[in-house]
Length: 546
Ligand code: MN
Image 1: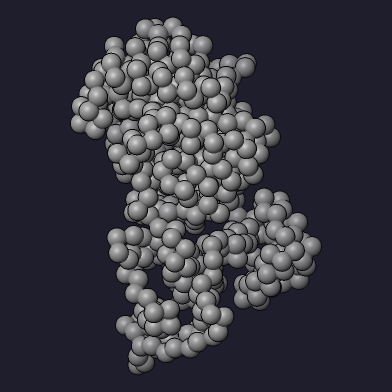
Image 2 (image 1 turned 45 degrees about the horizontal axis):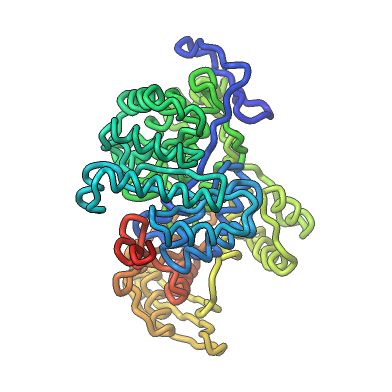
């Protein structure tokens, strides 16, 4: 069991004498800006389609983040379209767009955000000596002027403006203070301090923020935010140290994904602040019971696996291996657990079986946050019945895997219709594959391979007349047991671009074939990483729009 109650953010500290401070009566609100769709999408090898981004944005609204950073509209027409669609269709959170300090960027960002009732323009510029001298080739004064004038320009479009001095942790403190004061005067309502390269350490970072608050009293009239990277594994620690120094917004990514080693993980910041209100004095408005589901969804759509020992959402996060631990947990969960799997929505709940009807399925899916239309429900029901025939117990996790598989986004240039594989100790692995191609006709091919999956992939390659180089192949069991659903994530590379694919089935060879076909479809759709400029690389092309 856990000490949680029904309201968010109120958990007592389990009697640890180290945490004797009492929780404040009125914890202050800690804002969560989630940047999974912007910084998270900049993870090496990750590309999300506009449709994927909408699905994730809706889930972020369900988990109740305060602000969704939806993308960087100037980067490409695709980014622009995704931000525009999210601004139009996702209700609840403030929708933010990222913009460099160029007039063209700011205008494009404002335009993408137009449909949103509540929107934020987030402007940033590198302020550290390295960024000024090597990347921007601008003087301190020039950077200052640009930051102030572009904050003011953003303000003409939206009341809600965030300014970030990029690489704040390596910026001269006095100069940082000047830029912060100048942009607040120009109308910034949030000042975000990025530890862009993950260089900070908790005590020093906290010290810098405390010093800055004294040096720039106007900071207390705006929201102070941090954006910490995980190059030293300190992103969450630095974020939490900032909260103790007075930061009231933290920028996160689901599963801690993002540039290089990633960003502060949403689920870790969420649970650390929830378990320790007496330490941090804040509460978020997050619905913690959606954290696990959010993690799974982002992992499926980005193709980035969650490591088993990952805090809060990893497969082992609530598993007990040693005898002493198992014995303790059986007697009283609190002996070795500070939170319960069900707190984050990871408890495996047995829900449906062979005899459950369409109505029960629809109800359960709705409770899980999936609103399927009639057609989708019909397909999901067929899959569910098929699964219930093969698997005794169908859990929430199984259902989610099925829905994710059915809802696989993007066009279907290639459709897998039939797959048969024969393999064994004395057989050469052989696959027979039938696929419908974009001309609407079915074709069949047979291939031999080193193993069953290799054979299937060779047959698919010959039908689709492509050669995708398989860069990553990962299998994961959704639930325990011999009849578990297997999920496969693949990453393909072709001509310097990469596409990911995902498939789920009780048969892992079928799941592998689905994942491969999915990746080929995404490659054909142009949902690839490696071509798209990031805020750091878009460079001179954008300066034309200054
Ligand atoms: Mn970043």
